[in-house]
Image (cartoon, rainbow, N blue to C red):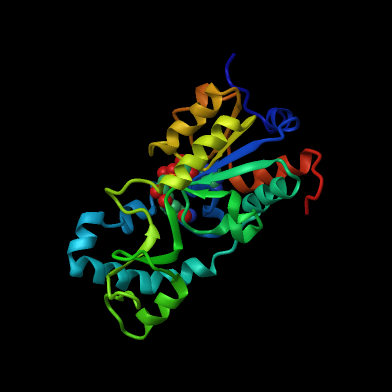
Length: 257
Ligand code: NAD
């Protein structure tokens, strides 16, 4: 049967679901003013992150990374969760959410109120900085203050090692614990709701099929087609925020705000 494509179809699919995994990409956060990766103004074109090898060995690469971050991190901190993030937080309050598996690094699911233990960040987080030598972790705002005070290649206070963002760099594997937890959640869910991701980056792009192979229904909401649309029970070509807000207001939820 071809996938169904209306909001009513999505409501029908989601109403009985009690163990939902929502998988999100950059598209859930564009309404908050954070550009996606591969769109025309995407970060892919303007702010491609360095490779781990270059970053680890080249102080110039680190200096230019931190110089750019000194300018852009305050903008990231100022971004607010949107109605899409709020809708997902409502699923959590209602006890229907098993996990949010996200490729985003912006922390907006937690800020919207999703239990942080349920947010699995496959590409890490920009709000933590850590030492490349001893793994000491720092709040990114603490490091931002050092950058603004003029440090160009900030160092670990414990061991003087070079610091790095908590996000995954090119050439680096995904954080094992988050990936393992995401695989377990995909095996256990009864609905996989994919929102705002182009589904071109593996292994994240394979997770919806893993969920489906383990008996979950699959729904996709994205403003442009994805390669898994034909496999979905429901796929909606549309905007993440309004679609999720309408979905969550149409299904009976205890504890929703
Ligand atoms: P992507 O840019 O490849 O795809 C985003 C998809 O969302 C696109 O298909 C686009 O058409 C769609 N989209 C954009 N706005 C939408 C909206 N309002 N409603 C519905 N669909 C919308 O993003 P991705 O698949 O998440 O790429 C993965 C990489 O991007 C990851 O490495 C992630 O770390 C990084 N990234 C993260 C952020 C963030 O944290 N907010 C921002 C940019 C990039």
